[in-house]
Length: 417
Image (cartoon, rainbow, N blue to C red; front, top):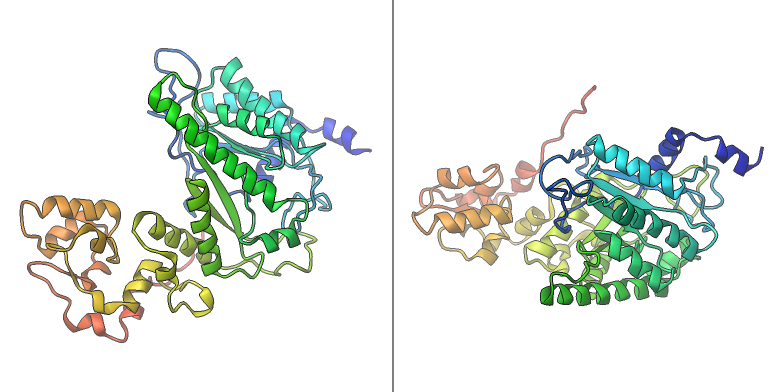
């Protein structure tokens, strides 16, 4: 039986099983920052705001409230790290445009999802595949007045016209850089050209900025990927250090105005190349990269600060990056929360941006005690070692040799169920 005959016999449910599983390696499924579409007044289907959306989260924190699928896992590319590469011996399937549209609408009406995350293997040509992805989004928006969230994974070697059209219908678009360095990309994914990726991301930034300026002048101007663009890097497939990965992310944020860089821990795949590691990196490494990324974006840290004195350019897996930095710079602590400015407060382990803003607001009216701070934060366990209040000072504990061991998260026993 040939592939076409076998494919024709697959039910929609079987295709969904194959193509949702094939999409699980893409971490870029968050729906933050989208435009405020809604179906108030009985017009349209779906919403990106308000109630009626069933949000679901995986144990590792990823948002899974989107219908996250591939249009097809057939692919003419042979990327070494990809389970869907052309030489991979996996079960294949392909949705029609109409099937993806129907699934999205049916799942949304049942309150299973808040929108669609759609990617695809490359079939026939990049332009053909990109055109099929655009047809899905266009049909949902124009034929069915769908107002939920749409995230399209773009193909960088497709024409700029198709990429621009995709961004007219999608809330967010993304182009994966795949690996931290162009050298690794050429080694593991020779069909993917770094220049194509840079050109597509740069073109998107230009059009997103232009559209935002047009929207400032006129609210009737069409939205163009209002939630911006993002990308993804695979962690652990090559020998790139955490320092290299974070420096690459900083370059991407600066050059292309990305909303997010997603990190995806490499997962060993069947019949994999000898070029790839035999085992996956610790999942905690992915988690620490996200934490470090957050520090550079919202807490005023530079990558060099986070990675200073890091052995081999690798983040400490035993404690979070902010705590690791504070332990290396104990001379800057403790910090008086009744006097310090916001920039310094953001560097205190155990304080998030919201907690800092709450402390700054409250201290305008009273001198804060440790008990007051405790009401504004999740936990004082780590925080109390780095702050001074009107009734608390950590004393010699901050200089203790065992402080890191005391503050590191306690090992957790795995649940049986």
